Image (cartoon, rainbow, N blue to C red; front, side, top):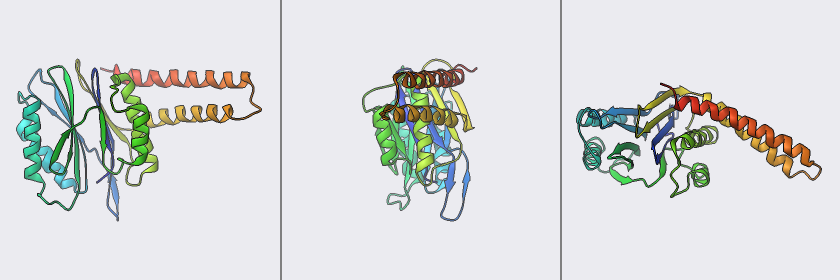
Length: 252
């Protein structure tokens, strides 16, 4: 079941996305590995993304978290404690398999992101990912777009996270299928999109336009007028695709 889930903390909330591929050496299928747990009214929701070699363990962990957190008035310390105790109960002390989670929530106007590896839990300062997709490729792209100390606003973080997951699906074995996306803003309702490939196409179009421009810029025979046309084309592509993401974030 190892694939990819990726999340980042934003000044105005939190973004979590992941692929849907679940596979073994003999077969693969697709289902969501993200889940949400509503807290008490006014407390918002918890978003969780799983990557692990046993899907049954994922179900046990998710159910354990729901049993103790759903509709409860819990803050950061209590959520962290419940997460730790749930992992201790669901995962053997010396587990042979690898189980990882990303768990995000908002508390007192601040977004928090926790990463787990089997029974260990650690806070995430800005962004992180789990699964096979936690590769050199993802870390390289993450260092460019997300960095280690910069918190992008949601409207900028969504396309970046989608792009990183899309590249993992292209180039990392074990990652694939549609993408699930959860956006947890401080104010307003959580925005959800499950099983989409629409944003992958948007990323491909932008990437292709950028590649054409960069290739042309290195050609000694290219003229300034040709470069200007390519720049204008890229600007138009970016404008049209940004409207797609903006419409998603503004949907009711």
